[in-house]
Image 1 (cartoon, rainbow over the protein chains, first blue to last red):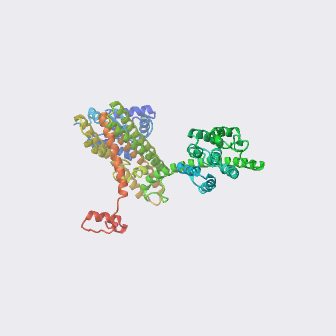
Image 2 (tube, one colour):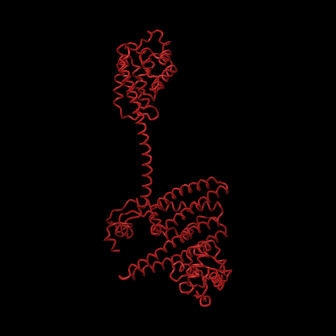
Image 3 (cartoon, chains in turn red, blue):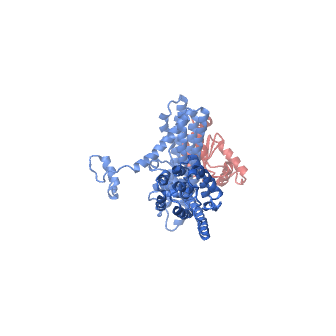
Length: 123
Length: 466
């Protein structure tokens, strides 16, 4: 698992949701599997354990340890259409969703092909 | 019972001296006031007003004409008939035997008389002895050809004075009013009875769910309203489940077409979707009720995982029952089991972390900022709802995936197996609860397991030794 901090200094003034979303998309495209998380959130812990259990090495952004984390959280919440902003999973730069979507995808058998496609899993 | 009643008056007219039997008959009837057959809810109830009238007129008649027994029975069947307004037909077959009337004629006369007796508001003069009213004439007219040989029926005794007649009319009115009142009251009682039975049934269901609460709940022993509401919904869902299972079973046995089966299977999936939706709402109001399994039976609670069944266990149970499966299907189901296990593991680890975090918060609550710590702990507890919802989501997705992987006939069989399995598990709880207990004292110490069980069933002191 790799923990990254977003380049908040350069985008210090970004407050609009659109700019934050842009950043989110940019960050998401940076790795095969990207998880936006909060270190104290137990559901985030669960989703991290899920990917690790599958042998995947996701890139995790802990928003509570990021100065601009709040804006990203707001943008993510906007993206998901309300509700909890974390955890959110991107695979291959594309949005998968929150925990329930990830679960449904895994049970439905679509998660593993996505991971393989993104190069996060080899069999 | 009707025949029994009719039989008695029949004996009256069959015998040669009805006139002295009749007075006995009346007290006989009066001795059975509580007999429900007298309370005729369909037609007019037994009418004491009419009885009184009949007695008076009868007495008058007897004094004047006790030899004309056939006339008595023919002309005055109204008296005895009125007493049994609900059994006119059978009665008439017996009463005119002495007068050798044909059954039809007597029926006619009887029914004519009966309608008269049933409508006391109608011309009340039909009972006036003389002159015989037109209706009476009709009956009398039918009678008279038969009795041509006998004396023309004498006019009944001179009418009682006006006062008596008025009193009789008033009595009739009062009797009618009390009849109507009684009818209304009885109807009210009936509807209350139905309502009571309904309430008792609901209470029974709620209690049978609440029984498994044990002593762990609030001091009052009651469950929260959210939990109680869910329990009622769940018991209704169980009834529906039973219905769905029967439908699946008969559909499979009847070898219905695939399209028909599909409807039933889709219905069963929707049935499960419904319980997950109900559980979602219940998780908001009382997550502890769900996660501790207070809504389930003890045997189910034993295997409870995060507020419900463990999907991978269900699939493990299903695989041998679903034979025959194609290679592809088998791979698909094994893969489903595997991914379900991974998801369960992830959720369990998340819940473990929540538990650990909660323990830390409560343990580190100092006297100074205990309120703050409690507030933090409350915030963490709120996450429980999310885990129960994710677990239910997992269960729902598993069932849907099974539906996708299997043919319609296989799916029908699969859901039948699932329904029967959980039904048996629930039944196991009931059987276990009602099993005959061994004596408390261990008779055979060499049998370790039995004595262990007996020790567990014995006092707490002994249990603590283990």
